[in-house]
Image (cartoon, rainbow over all chains, first blue to last red; front, side, top):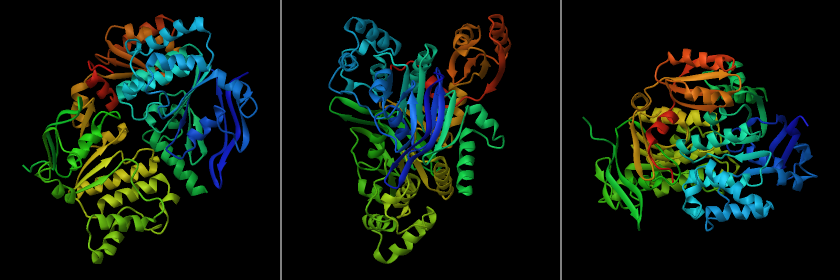
Length: 246
Length: 310
C-alpha cells in the first residue's frame, strides 16, 4: 500500500452544518502531516473519522489500507491517538496509566517492562514514574499521553492540538520526541491552529470551515504567494480568495 | 514620567502550601500593550485576577491606575475592562441583549445606554448582526462581542485573557488592529496569548513559568539579550542523519529539526562554510543554507534554560 492515510471526499455533517466538506488527501508513510486551521475548521472531526471513532456522513477514508467504516477496530489496534484534552487518569501514577493502556491494547506482559522503560526514558519521565498524573505540569501530561498512545507500537500517530497551552520549551521537547518517532518510520498526523507549528510539518492541509484550501509543503505554499510575508498571510489570502469567489 | 498604568510589586499568591504566583514584579506603561506568556497553570490567570480585584494577594502589591487593588478593589473594577478566556457570553441572548446585560452590570445609565451600545457595535464591527443569537455566531464574531462587552464603559485599562484562542487568522488580525487603535487612543492593554506572532506585536512581554517571571522586556530587547547568536536554516539530504553531524560541527551551539529543515544556532555566520564542508564530506548534499531571524520561541527556550521541567 502506497499511502497510510487516504481520504476520498470525506464528509461529515451535523444537521445542516457541514463540519468536514469533501476532504480528499493522501499521506505517505513516514510523513509528518499537519491539519492546520482555527476552531471550527474541521480538524478534530477529521481526526475522529480517521481514528474510527466517528462515522463519515459520506465519502470514504482508509488508514493502513483498512476502511474506517468497516474495519474500525482493526485500525484502532494499529494507530495511536493523543487528544487535545487530557484524557488520562489523574489519580493513577505515570506507571499505572501506562500499565492501564498496556492492558487495553493487550501488550504481551513480557514486552511491557522494556517498552515502558524506553518510552519513559525518551520523554525524560523516568524519575516521575510514581507521580500521580494530576500532579504533572501541562507539558509532562502531554508527554505521558504520548507515551500511553505509543505503548502498543502504533504505525500511525494522530495528535489533536498536542501542544496547545503548553510552554515553548515543552513544545520544543515534544517535537524532538515526535521527530525521533518519525526517524523510526512512524507517520504522524498533527492538527494545530499555530503557524509556527505548521512549519514543523512536512506537508500541511490548510483548512477553513470544513474545506481544504490547499495541501502542500509549507515552503511551496509560501512560494506560491510571493507577495505574502509569511505562511499565515498566505493562509489569509487563500481564505479571502475562497470567500470572494463563493 | 507618568506612573505605570499597571504594576505588580513582589506580588505573591499562595493557596495552602502551593505558591501560584511567586514574587512577580512588572510594569505596563500608559498606552502600551503588555503581553503575558506562559503555559496553562503558570500563574498568569491568578495574577490577572489579583490585578482585577477578584482575588487578594498573599503579599506584595497590585497597582492599577495608581490604586492599590487590595485596598480599593471596587474603584479598580470601575476603571478596567476584562475579557475572559472563552468569552462569557449568553448563548441564548442576541448580540445587543448581551451588551444590554453588560451595560447594566457596569452601571451605564438607561438613557445613555442605547447610544453607548451603538458606539460599541460600530467599534467592534458588529453592526451587521446585532439581533443574532450568540449561539449562531462563529468564534471570530463572538470574540468581537466579548471585547465589546469589556469596552462598553470606556475603560482606560483592559485585561484580555487569551482573547484569540482558536479564532481564525483573519479575525485575529482584525482584533489586533483594534487593540492597536485602542492603545493609540491611550488605553493600556494587558493580554495573555500562546501565539508567538501576537507576542511580537506587544510593546513589552513577560514570560511566566511555575509562578515566576523568567523573562521581561520588549521583544527586540529580549531577542538581543537572550538570543544574540545567528540562526541558520539548513536544507540538505537526509536531515535525520545530518542532524548529528551538524550538532557536532565546531561553532554550532544547538541544532534541531524544523520540518524538513534544520535550525542551527551558531557562534558566527561563518560557521555555514564549515557546515557545508562537513555535510558534503559525509555524503549529504546541501541544497541551501540561509540565515533566519530568531523567534520569540527561541528566546523563551534560551530564557528557560536551567529551569527544571516538572
